[in-house]
Image 1 (tube, rainbow, N blue to C red):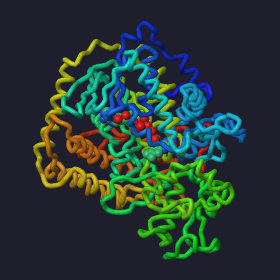
Image 2 (spheres, helix red, strand yellow; image 1 turned 90 degrees about the vertical axis):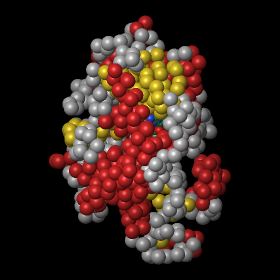
Image 3 (cartoon, helix red, strand yellow; image 1 turned 45 degrees about the vertical axis):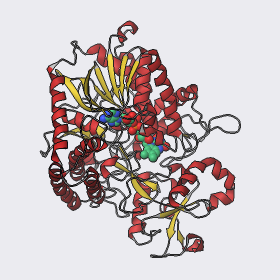
Image 4 (tube, helix red, strand yellow; image 1 turned 135 degrees about the vertical axis):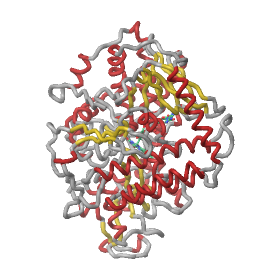
Length: 637
Ligand SMILES: Cc1cc2nc3c(=O)[nH]c(=O)nc-3n(C[C@H](O)[C@H](O)[C@H](O)COP(=O)(O)OP(=O)(O)OC[C@H]3O[C@@H](n4cnc5c(N)ncnc54)[C@H](O)[C@@H]3O)c2cc1C
């Protein structure tokens, strides 16, 4: 396997322009001769499908949801970054680029990040033109707020529903193309394999989730925009049915998987309340604009928060990181919360919580102002916890939230399988070892609206593509293999539910490959996962049949994939003998407990090649060069 990153030469500011000029174009009359499959209708897939169809390509678009609008992107709360500098506070494309490379702890490709910062300004214009109701200042200008890891205010938002409003924008564009006939939409349809012909991605195999029918679709190129894999941990802030199946099965067909161990643990989630909980809820990072994080100074202090005097509180983020304070990046704020809880100073019944307190902000700005900014988040918190955050501080704790790893892609967003492109959270491209807040929406929309429309044309214009139909033997073989796997799952008739296996896997991953990791724990996990996988294939119970709506069967396939994928995550975490961003190896920390990178050995993206279930994956390295942002120890002090 060869990793060709295809980074254009020349100064970083000119790379994307130069590349766009040098790429081949498909003439408008020829575009309608090409068919492109887009899997996923979140911000990345929805924007890509609509834009490719606008350009004239025939698009076949797939989602396992009942409507494109249900994609997990709809859950995004806080906002989307862009280097517009509307606040005149010193922002620029270069600063957004710099913050993102540094925020990712120097494990992202500079050229991609610079392009992302450049495109960020176009995204806002595009969305405003679509009618996305971003918050505005009194005078009509778009408003901004701050997110972690930045000292400027560059986050555009629509109350606490930014993802929903952006997705409605992309969805309108998609619906228009569906109505025009440019996009054929397949809802309730799960992609379960990629089909390669002559080494190129030429189609997919799907299952209709209502009837169980297995179908195949052929195309000239395939785009995966299927989201992240955080649910490998079972408990996460992701939508319950987000999963890794699409990218994992593409990996098994030859797409390299990059940096699978780079997981983001978000510091502000509602703490776990019991063993049978199946979902965690995020409290947006935007709350840290006005909320102050603290714990009691004394261990085991069980007094109600309002009874603890100021002098006996530890505002530990403000104390440890005075420059960024409560807006320290997510990896740093999460570890700091774990540390104070490990010391016995955590709050709430379990001791696994810290306060996020709005008393000062309410006193300064008034309750009404806070209600206007965060009303829906406060309401959501109260519904879940039965505590009123206008009166008592919220209790929060870190939880799995986002995955920076994903399928390896080159500068054109193409994987190591020619013709298979990967967008949004499903790829590994821009965030290195830690994603800054409000930059996932930016990346998904950059990929879908502004990058893939150019780069896919270059692929199609250069590739010599034979006419292929679903009658090709490769399609038949993939369909037969899927039918065999389905029958195998249904035939086990064991004693444990799919969820029981998923929950156990999640516990292993959280314990040994979670917020902090060490070699001993990772080796333990690498011993336990194959055993659990073996038990799954012997003892799982998947009731029902394959010719009906069968959610147990859907989940079984996804959990079977997580049981393979988890092993790769732990392998990656074990091999990376350094700490960087969200990957904190306890053995590699500075004297004051911060992440200790080892640039001499690990300044690369780790791209793994599949070698068979249970066999050691093969590591390929894409060296990362830092020519514009000097490699330094990351500091937010
Ligand atoms: C609670 C929460 C809040 C967040 N808030 C923010 C925020 O404020 N700002 C920010 O920048 N980021 C935020 N994020 C991150 C951000 O929402 C996601 O990273 C982003 O929306 C992912 O978009 P996507 O298009 O890549 O994937 P998704 O939105 O996850 O979409 C995946 C799509 O793929 C489809 N799909 C998946 N697998 C298959 C398959 N096998 N077959 C068929 N279809 C399939 C799904 O149906 C869906 O349509 C938040 C995340 C969470 C969990």
